[in-house]
Amino acid sequence: MTKIAFLFPGQGSQSVGMGKQLADVNPNVANVFRQADEVLGEKLSKLIFDGPQKELTLTTNAQPALLTVCTAILRAVQQHSIFPDYVAGHSLGEYSALVANGALTFEDAVKIVRMRGESMEKALPHGQGTMAAILGMDRETLREITGEVSRFGDSVQLANINCPGQIVISGTKTGVDKACEIAKEKGARRTIPLEVSGPFHSVLMEPAAKRMKTVLERYELKDTKIPVISNVTAEPVTSGDDMKRLLIKQITSPVLWEDSVRKLIQLGVTTFVEIGPGKVLTGLIRKIDRSVNVLPIYDEATMEIAIRELKGDHT
Image 1 (cartoon, helix red, strand yellow):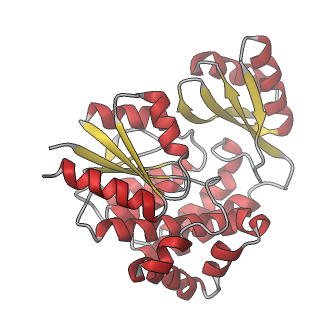
Image 2: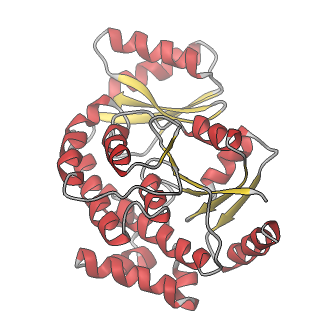
């Protein structure tokens, strides 16, 4: 019998109308949106379904919105009695993974990620930090470049190691610009500045990590039978206390996404199910290892295809 991993996307996957089609036809899905509205005391569902996109993209809104949509789609998958052997999420997506494996309740998770979004938004004055994607360069060369730039007073580091040839760097604006310049000189195929509100997954997020330590101390994360692959270590974790510690560290540490996927394959996973809007993680996995099966679920049609295939795997 095949081993399955449920994967959840992070910030950047949001779009107006995400999850609406499933909410219109599935009461369990619609209920998750109602829960989010009740817990936060606002009409988050209206913003998700109707926009505007600019407001939805704000970090403080995008984070609870994505968690809500991912959990809503997850509930629809669970109705078919399909459960994962492992879970993982890209950055913010790790919170959806922890709802999926039972470490966190959805109600607690949506409150936590709203505060996470606020903390990350306020960690640094707007415009002082940024991020950029570097294409066509290996991580060791890029690590040497960011180290060299940082030694001369600007802060820049690897932030997301997504797949071979796609790494995101994060830091001060001048640090990121310098690192991009050197990367191009040393053979990077392309450097792409990212539209972000801060230098996520860098040491500049330390104020947000401190605040999230205080926030997470108020919540219980349960030990679980289904391991989560941590962004920070790319290793399986089942201890609630360890998950909490790593969630704090995650804010200032690189997301080891390529390593996490390779670890899951090493653990015997042959089917990856991306649960959430878009197909970003599906694309990354195909660049990491084309031999594995990847099933994105984001609407009724993709749900039907994935469930049919997953049930076939389990018969």
